[in-house]
Amino acid sequence: RDMATRHVASSRSAVLRAAENYVKWDPNVTTRSAVSKLLDCSTNLDGDLASPGSLELKSMFTGRLKFGTAGLRAPFGPGYNCMNELTVLQTAQGLLSYLKEDVANNVKEKGVVIGYDHRCSSGFTDYDLSSKQFAMVSAAVFASQNVPVYLFPDLVATPLVPFATTRAGAACGIMVTASHNPKEDTGYKLYWGNGAQIISPHDANISRHILENLEPWGR
Image (cartoon, rainbow, N blue to C red; front, side):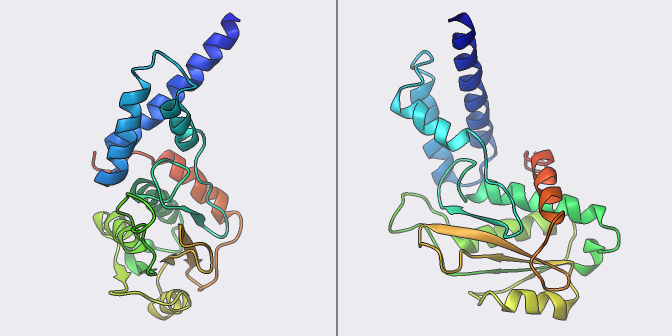
């Protein structure tokens, strides 16, 4: 019984730590406020993991989106299992950290191409999130490290991003889209300098760098 109690307390504390960091780091006021309200509710319940607030926090902060060869795809929303400004920022930081290791790619000279589609969360959530915002967040991460950014000024069809990547000789291309998937989702596709979607072991290496760069740079 004592061991079970300690396990529950440990799980709860890990979820709470993750949620507290999210509130501290998330640049978007709508998703940040949603998690903050859940935290206020949960931390007043004396460890009751069966409370609605605690259960929602557990679903948001147990695990996180996994970066694969197809990049990321998930619903708009708060937490580490959804697409939001913080998970995108962390992904961009991890990607740039990995690109810096690839001396031959020379990201600081070649730069990156970024495009986005029309998707946004208005109409079916209370959150102010969109593919365009995620593209801007990514662009800001790269620009903050003096990496040239070729950001499309408006909505763009997905194939134009790998085309522009090869035409510009960029280190990689990022397209914020979920293609044909439900409107509640968006995604983060990555193309290497040759215009092709990434293959292993790039995905695993990027995932590792994301986990090593969770806190927003400059904080």
